[in-house]
Every structure is written in C-alpha cells, then in structure tokens.
Image (cartoon, rainbow, N blue to C red; front, side, top):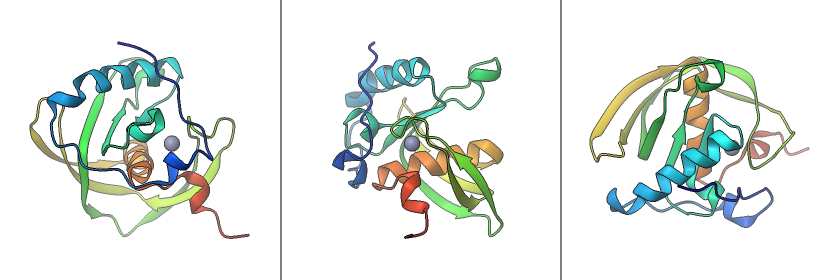
Length: 152
Ligand code: ZN
C-alpha cells in the first residue's frame, strides 16, 4: 500500500480516454494504493488516470469525512440510465486543487460495474453519490470539471 503522486491539471494524461481493465487481479495493488492516496489527499473520489494509470477504474467513499467509511471500487463502469432531471453543483477535484467549478448533471444514474472481486453489479445512485460517480466517470473519458465550463 502506498500513497501515489496525484496528476495535476493540465497534465495531458487527464485529457485522454482510458482503456478497459482486462484483469481484475492485475489492478488489486493499484486499488489499495488509490484508496490510500484518496484518503490521504483527502478526497472522496479518485480515478486511475489521476495517478497516471490509463485504466477505466475509480474508487470513491462519499461518507468517510462525516464518519463511517463506505469504500466503493468501480471497474469498467457503464451508465445504463440517467435521470432527465438535472441539478447544478460545485465540484472540486484532487487534480485541480483549490478550484470549485459549477457543473450541471443528472440527479440520478443507473450504473453497471465490475467490483474488485470480479462480480458484476448494477445499482441506482442519487444525490452526492450520483454526482461523484459522474465526476469520476468523466475522468475515464479524459474530461475534467473545467471542460464543463462554457467556452468563454
Ligand atoms: Zn476529479
């Protein structure tokens, strides 16, 4: 387990699309290191490209700052559905320290993903979790919060 250096914007790795994870076993160490890095930062979500690994994988824990830990690993996540209702929200990013960006996103999403044990899961998320998942998912496609700002 290790705390890894976090890639900071405008590093070009944050603008690239990531490749699917082909072997869950091959990312076991990376997942542990990503949780160490996220909790040390401290943050609530971290995507693999933020530690320089161009793979479709992120970790998150939306509750630990308020008390109990609820670690989640999403490998090769896919959005199955998104609510037509959207809401604005201010988002920070460990790769863009100190800058909050307003981003409008669907308020609820249905996601299918592979867990760290190789099981396929599908679940509905809303509130902060839905926002966090969409933020981390963006990273897997080379999108950061600043890309959501209007061109000017
Ligand atoms: Zn981010």
